[in-house]
Image (cartoon, rainbow, N blue to C red; front, side, top):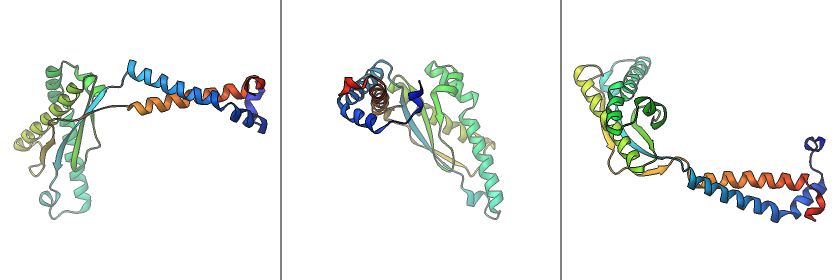
Length: 205
């Protein structure tokens, strides 16, 4: 056990280099294991829809200070975030896609850091078509609801929203295959190196 807390000697490093076939094989087997895990338990697909948000700061507060501009942006941004995650929109999506609202909020949907310009609406699902349709429906529902709130006075009248990407959305895996291959390869390669260092040296001469 004490050997675990002692740094490798020159002989250990030489032995490790001589056993390069062993730890390279470990790396290859690790990559294969990563590929198998990817095939058995693949990560979900995700799609991204985009809504352009323009607060029209110059028109809304043409004579105000930077501090007042900041509070205006913060207030309106918070309103739009609340609309995006509102019960009305979540219930609408839940009814259409048969996914509980709690799951939509906690696991399926993700809103990028909102600011002026593009807001990105992400959706994850095992089925790539459902992921794309869900992201699109969320962005469209958000745009429609914000426009309703602008007309009713719930959102500043100078705010403008427009769905810019919601049709034919490309989908990707949340975690690419390369990450699985790299993780598996590095894991078994490291294990193989420890085996070489702490097993009987004569086996690798």
